Length: 204
Image 1 (cartoon, helix red, strand yellow):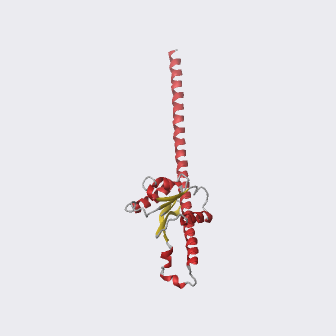
Image 2: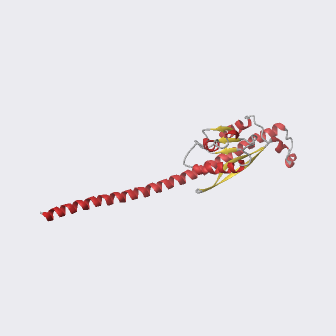
Image 3: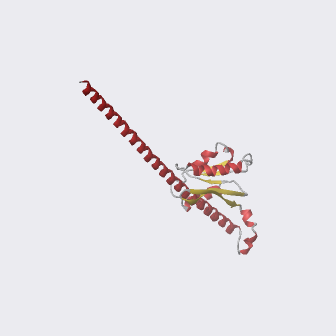
């Protein structure tokens, strides 16, 4: 499993939705040591290491601070392929951007070389030897990671903009309430002083 999140804040629900999906799928598989988690970004690691520390194979930090590039995706894919862990299948978890106020948590399947080599329609292509197949898998994996990073970055940005918009509205409402409270307090003090002056003048 490859979890794509980031190291940036103001979009907590984005990371929570991914970890919730992973927890639901690991509910019956957590004891299986063959199930490994690769966290891209600190947020997913922080949320999952409390529950599944034995399943986390590796984590990659400093992801999400800048717009993702294909070079980042290639580095991530290369690190996973060079981890020494042989997988039969896997999934990439990410959030897909839908609109400025919504996103959907999805997963993309990752297939092993054996699975791709056993595909029925692979024989349609000529000269598909082991080297060509390996190059295809590496490029395809990097593409999938890059797609997930881009979609996730869009979802995070929209969530961050929504959070900032809500914060601005809340700050404006708070300023309005405080201004009203200040004006009422000031008016109350002025009224009390005027009453004291009138009462003193009447007593004289």
